[in-house]
Length: 463
Image 1 (cartoon, rainbow, N blue to C red):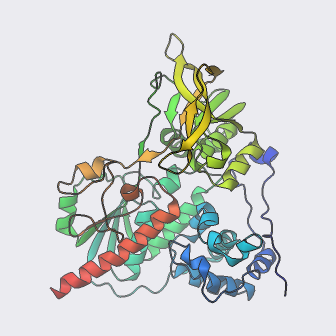
Image 2: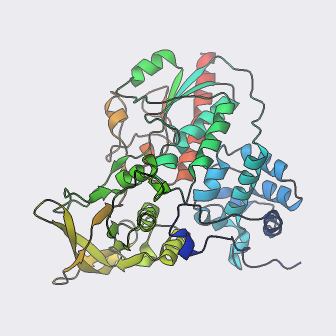
Image 3: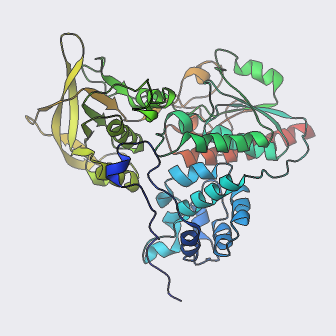
């Protein structure tokens, strides 16, 4: 039997419509389409797709359930390994993970695994997610610092093993980057709340407005808990370090997206606290966060939204889907350009960015061709707002507040592959250990750390 070489298309809002709202862009598969897409799976015996899944989902297993129309069983298979499927099904770079290993990719497009994971998670949510039977509590307590993807995953897995879990969150709502760093049109807040509710139903407690390192210290937590997991992410923005970066109108991507999410500016123009950005916005960088900034700017009313990037499209780290969506919505890409200074008014307001044209030279340590400035190619662009989206570094608060915790040269917490730090009983994972990465990799780190914590505490009992 021949197999369709391309994925079944995902319905989505047309660009002319979605650029004026914050509703989700992809609309999801209908049940009939999901079944047909799942039938494309070859059910390979060696399951290569699973090798690309950081959270170890039995992908052929849940796809087979979909082909049978047994969506509830498919949800059980996914939930056995993934506590946050509605989230990963939306933001995971599956083209580089599970789908990147799919056998069908050799002759066409891989199975739409990410789309099908989202479909099942959404089906489950409408029917009511059923948490698994939780084992009897073993009396051991674990503190989780941070309610982002790493912390929530670690908390959920440990709760399933019978541990008493308390998650400490510095802000007033759970989710970390899921809630504050990703736009509503890519990851609706209702989805995050729903997945967090599932974690809570496993018996996990979440305490808000607790800044570990200030409100309470890790040594104090270790007096009350048997182990601690640190999953505080990478919340320290990187800057261009060029003149004029202190002008009014220059923001880090972190601040901009957090403002939009915390102030509910995604309800603009029907909300009374929109974020003011002016008519022309320039975003510097070309990762997923940069695309989020540029696309959000258009939805907030910018007449022009630019992406300035010093390399070419071939080197862009953003997902292809995000780049395509940005283009469809009218984002203007100014490639091979490098900012050299911001220029302001007498009152300290941003008015222009000056940049140099670039060309690509020899590959650098990242393997990408190094951008080289072209002398005398200076140009200026009039802008009202500049958004710097060139990456983040680990938040230094916790590492600095824990003497003896070994750190890397960039301030990240040093761990082994399972999340063990230099101090027994303290584990870490996600961006705080690796630097800024993806949601699914943070989830994978949380899963590994949960296993390591369980092993550590079981062995400690035997001593």
